[in-house]
Image (cartoon, rainbow, N blue to C red; front, side, top):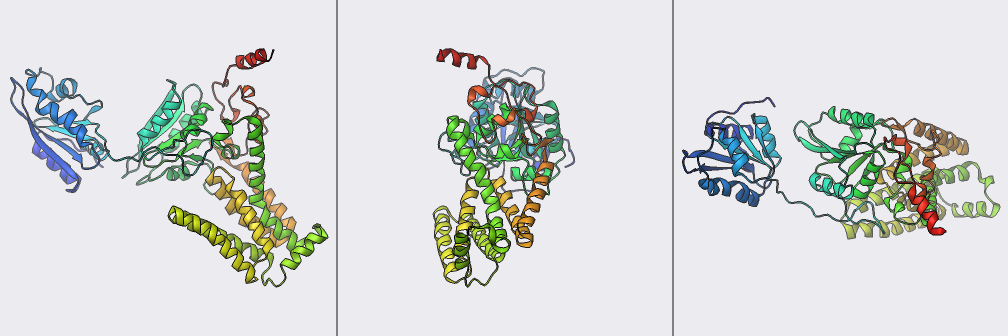
Length: 506
């Protein structure tokens, strides 16, 4: 939008705003007159969008001071009347002057009020945002047994507050910007000065400044534009709606990207290891956490490999199975008209259909579709001799293992990759499965997230960061921050805690 200057006349400025907003029906213009004791009356107008600005705030912090309280003031000084009102009359917390029409229109569309005065070629913007907001509720996608119950909402100011409540550090910085040619969406880059690497901060800001889209409706837009490898099925930015996970990431030297109108924030850089972690892992004692993490990593391999391994063994290498098991599988597959690969594809696609149907339907109906539909479809497919009972068990085990992965985006990447492994196993058996695994491992090794290896800390090997990977060391052993972010301040906690622990034992 080309910048336009204001006119001196109030009526001309009002018409200019109406024309730029194409006479939209939700624009409210409130014309009034300001009277001082020893000063001529001044005509003014308030311009705002209905539903975006708070009527109570407008009445108490703008109209009442201008119409009633201003009468008690003497003649304004020689200074500009607009400056006098902002400094001495209006009690609102956030005020700013707009020198051009573009700034005023952006303020109006952001929920602010624009104050126009006759014979003044500038405007005053007052922050009166007051649209309805969803209350703070528990996370819907990252369930937790022990830990905070609050989650991000669609309000960026509320989300920043949730992070600030956890990190009461003056070095916590929120760098705000607007992205989108038409949406002009608010985005905040959060980091802790003195911990986050300056090069990482500059790189994230540089990529965000280059985003050129009409509108940003969700953080997923940002994720797909600024990530290192857009063609990979694995996401190299971590999404979360939990403020405690964002706070933990910031203290590790990572950056958070918080987008208005979405409850999902992004953490960068992200690795396979960080996406396999849950915030709850740090709220429970380390022996229990290690047991759960082992199950979680094993489940990720089960969700990825089980159907392909079944296809390869049954179709090409039945001699590798124990005799009794091979005979049981052969008896179960008797009368099945499809090869094991087609059988697996049918069941996997049926599972994906049920999963998506359960997500899109209302809550109670979705749960019913997922459970009852799975039982009915599986039983009917077995009775119709379309699939074997063993394949139903394999697919069910795969689905359960996939649900254990804490990050939905990572689980989706494994689901997509599973079909590639199934195809290679059906083509060349265990040789094809081995080749596909090597290709997958090579692909993961080449992935980066803002210069950090996706397989860190395993490739390249970092012995220090292994303390918080498949196994988690006790808290008194985690004295330093993860080194993959290259934090400026390495120490996470004082080593005196370790000495105090030994003293208590003595």
